[in-house]
Each structure stands twice: as C-alpha cells, then as structure tokens.
Image (cartoon, rainbow, N blue to C red; front, side, top):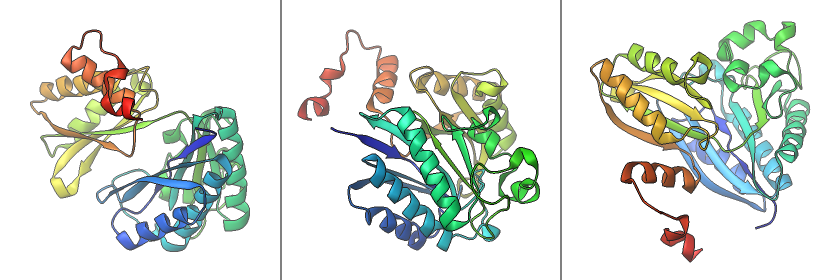
Length: 297
C-alpha cells in the first residue's frame, strides 16, 4: 500500500455548491491525491472533505484547498449551527499506512507555517501537533468561535502558533493538527427542544464525566425542526459507536423523546460498523474474513 496519509479538512460552507466544487477542484488538481468523499451539511453550513495520498502531495492538496476557501468564503457573512473559527476551520492529518503519527505532526507544522506565510492567516495546532497542552482538544482551541477570537486573539493565551496575532479579514483563523481516526456521528431526536439534546450531550461527553473519547454537543437542525446530538468519537475502539447510541437512546427516553435516526459524516473504518453489527446481531465466532468485500480485495 505504501505511505498513505488521510486528510479530513472541514470548511465553513455547506450551502453553495459552486464553492464546494471549486474547493474539490483544487484538491483534484494535485497529482497523487485521491478525493474519497465530500459531505456538505446545509444546516451546519459546513462541508467535510476526505482525501488520501502520500504525505507531501496530501499536504499540497490541503494548502490548495485552504487557499481556494480563503478566496471564496467570507466569515463576516457566515452563519451555521456548527462551531467554527475560520473559512478553513480545521485541517487534520491522519496516518493510514506506513506513516507514523509523528510524521503527521511534521506535516501539520509544515502546512501551518505555509498557510501563515503565504495566506497571512493565523494558525493554531491541535491534538498530537499541539504545542501547548491547553490546545490539544479541538473544542478548547475553537472556544469563542470566529466572533470571539476576533476580540481576544491579541491576548497572550490566544497567540497563534504560526502567523499574525490578528484574524484574516475574511478567512479568520485555521486549526491544523494530527490525530488518529475520528468518527463524526450525529443522532437526531424526535423533538425540537434543543435543551434536551444539550443535556444528553453533556451526559455522554468525556469532559463532563461521560464516555472516554467522546465529544458531543446539542444543536438544532432547522430545516428538519429536530434537535441533534452531534458527536466526535476520537477512539472508536476505546468507546464503540453502539455504546454511545444506546446511551443516547435511553437518555432520550427519560425526556419522553426517541431517536429518529443517525448519520455518519465522512468516512469511517469498516471495523467500527462490524463492532456495531456484532453487538446488535449477537454474532458468535464472527470473523472479519467473513465479509465478502474483504475477500474480494
């Protein structure tokens, strides 16, 4: 398979197809990079890209996408349900094959420096690439969002890791990092009361004493008039999806509501789904080699 790195950048645009297409074209323009998935969300006003390739081509594609987003997205006009800090909100590198997490940290630093120097955008490093312990977790780096960071970026605690200590006038700031596989998972509830989703998110969130590796918040999906528990699972082996789903379902029942559906944003490892199938089907002596597609590969 050779050296492979995955990049999963999130851009603050989920409603204008022409902008999303332009960013996708920027990624595809880099030889040696395969764009695997594009997941826009109109309510979040956000799009998640997934592409893979060898380390340096992936870094070039990430920069090209960031440059295009800087050109086309104006954060002064942006509104959406999901927290964000800039046009290119977060750009993580993930090791896939024959690449270490430390190498992805190097990529994050290289990209952060390039974005700062060539685009004049302040850059924060997070997760394994974090230079300060308080910037390891993404929600902590994004605290206050775009509007808040405009006000406090001049304070010592919010000084960027790279670039000017002031927000780009339209693109804001960028968060770049290196991490292991993360599963973005949303669970929709049969209620328009977003306070219920927030209470459930607080119950499962690691920072509030919930499940380890689980980050969650409650938001409103306006076009469907549904409250949603939106979740990032940063280690699906440590805390599997089905455990979180069952807890959300039981917590929702306490408030007299039910789960109407869930969704995966972007890509996820097959094993995460096999673990859920094993739990719900109560499979005995099941082996991954029994998956047809695994044998065809």
